[in-house]
Length: 335
Image (tube, rainbow, N blue to C red):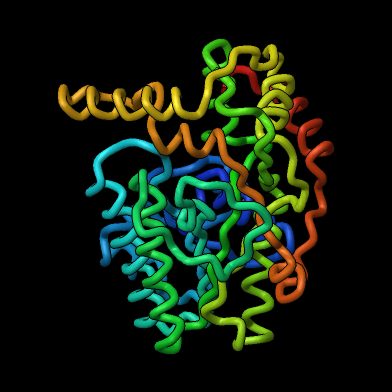
């Protein structure tokens, strides 16, 4: 008789999702992945896979049957696109997961959010989880993730055991979003702002650690339900130093050109208008949101995660960069 599946990871084939899956399997857990595609690497480690659309409530219900714990990492990231697409995946998808968890009495849910949900265009320096949502958003991703967060918080108040994590700029070996974007634009990158803005990121293994710790601690301390936690390296550094370090890991030269924040913001506004007016496909070379993100500080107080979850980044930024460089050298064709 097949052993009962206990843990579901939505987006299990993605960068963060697959890292969570691998860590769960390494400690002997039974894991099911729910993703749009089929992943041979998950099959090779004995992960049951269910393919489907997170916005399809019936598919999500099927994935949640027999499940004890859910890690909801599936999302539509990015800085450009149709609002309906972001809403469909990030909001409707999350509400489907919540409904399925309630229907099948899933004991706990760990929801992956983002610090961008509180970004108002100004610097965030050592802020904690009490900072409110901004009045307006300059991108669909943070807006829809904020709405989804509120759905999870509401569900927690109604009895679902759930914790929200806000990992910031996840990177490392296997990254299919942040690192490839930086390396692909290596020769076109321009420093925005004065270069003094600090950022704190999170290495992939540390981000996965935090998720598993959150689920384990929630089982031990149900009073943690409804809480939000920032997850980072705990090592703020100049943003452009981090970008240069990633470029170096990929064998590229550091960024040398620079531009004021105001100029970048105006260029972003013009690009957005042109792309919308003429229905141009793809992502504009600059947006207001990107100009703001690249010229402001983003680092967070992670003392709550350390205190409540026992989170401690086990891979330092320096060590992570060495591991990233080694991975990039042996996986040039996968960038």
